[in-house]
Image 1 (cartoon, one colour):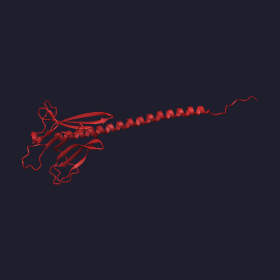
Image 2 (tube, rainbow, N blue to C red):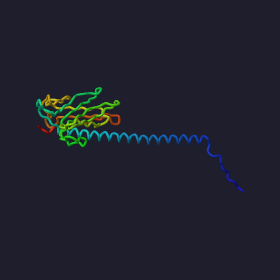
Image 3 (cartoon, rainbow, N blue to C red):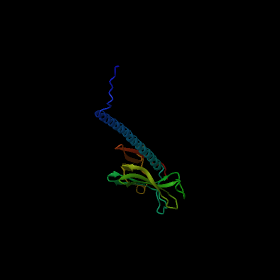
Image 4 (cartoon, rainbow, N blue to C red):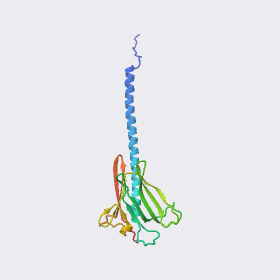
Length: 217
């Protein structure tokens, strides 16, 4: 009877170690790829959210500037109309403050004296070493001092508002001193320029919006 030689000794220790090492390398590569994709997805999602906030913010400011209201105020004017830009900075980064009287639909949060004429203020606030743009509004003719304050855009790097005074762009503007709203640049280049900067994927990204007040009193 012929017999067939069989090797039932199993795997050697060296073979097992090699298999374990190869499995560890493969697992590390797979996990690295997975978490890399997840980080890229999170960065893309964060960038899209920042751009959505930016688009909504710039569009809102554009519409409010376009509907800005001003007239020469008499000494006994109870509710003066204004357009004021203050040049401020935060450790060297532009952090303008914009206050204007604008025509806008009444906000549901205002329940008394809703006239549709609002005093709106945009200002930069620092918290935990992060800058955010906040927006305040109140009804011009409200008998109660109801102020709505909420974050408009989170984690910005800078917020710069510039006005054209008829000869040059300036970072400070007061309609009471100029006795007018900002002038339009010849050729329709706008009269108010707003620039917002934020960081996307570790790089600074900057967007600029131009608008011109169109309501005359």
